[in-house]
Structure formats: structure tokens, C-alpha cells
Image 1 (cartoon, one colour):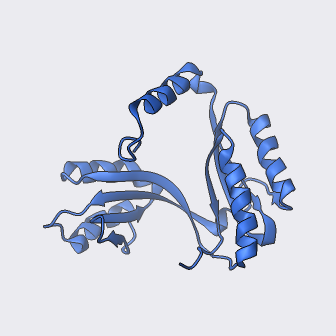
Image 2 (spheres, helix red, strand yellow; image 1 turned 180 degrees about the vertical axis):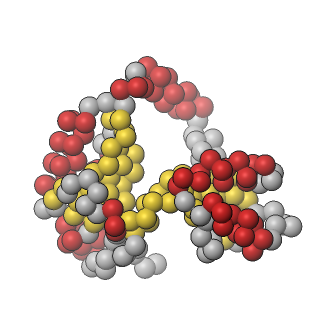
Length: 191
């Protein structure tokens, strides 16, 4: 992914060395969830070697913006966890046939196609991540992206002013070294 984004090799190597320098077994994946300003649900995925520090940092950001941190699982009903694969569409690839092959992996019938980049994005059951990856690679399909994500099931409308405040909060959360991803159920801005 870093190479696709044209990240310099020196940066990639430095990040790998930093990660290897720490004892990896001490890291835990944790999630924090709660309501931010204006009733927007916020889900934070983190990887930390010190959960006390991380929860204090996340709680401080929620408090600063008038939000409140909930208990784990309290907002999980507002987000579906999915695995997401993006790949180059081959000229002879019939997407209907491919989606039928993927039904057993919990892949949704609807997919996104970007004509400009000629890339297809599919969404599936997170438990099928490995099987989907093997299937795509086994069929000679060039994977350009693979990740886990949380997709909101119910989007909340916000005003431009409210969006600005929530975006600031999300930026601060994302700046924390332990935070991996931040998800909200805020309706995307219309372009």
C-alpha cells in the first residue's frame, strides 16, 4: 500500500524498524465507541501497548468536544464491519459471474466501479478476508487495496458548522499514535 502511494522507501523502512523495535506481543487491539458532538456516533480502532494511556487520550478528546465515551459494544449496532477489496478490472472479467462466485464468502451483490482508474471495490464478510484474497490472487486479479472497515448503518445529517467541529475532533483522534482508524455515522458532505 505504501509503495502504491509513492511513499519513499526510507519512510517505509523506518516505520518497519520502529515497529520491530517494540515487543509486538505487548500490543493489543482495542476499540472505543461513543457519541461525539451533535449526537454523531464515533468508533475508534486502536493498537496500543498501554490501554490506560490510550483510553485516557481518547476520553480526553471526547470530553473536550462535549461527547461521551460508551461501553464496548454499545454502538456496534450502528456499524457493520466489512472487509473491502479493491482490484483492477480485467477486460474479460464478468462482474456478475465473479459476484456469484463470492456469494459464499459473504460478498454483497452491490459493488463500486471507478471508470477513471478501472478499479472495482467489493465488500464482504470480515471472516472471509483470507479466502477472498486467495481467490482473487488465484485468478490472477491484481489487488490494489485490502482492508477492514466499519460502515454506518444509519447516517446522521449535520450542518456544515457541526461537520467542521466533528471533523476537528476526528483529526485530533487520528493524530494519536495508537489510533488506527476513526469511523463516524455522519452523512458525507455533498459535493
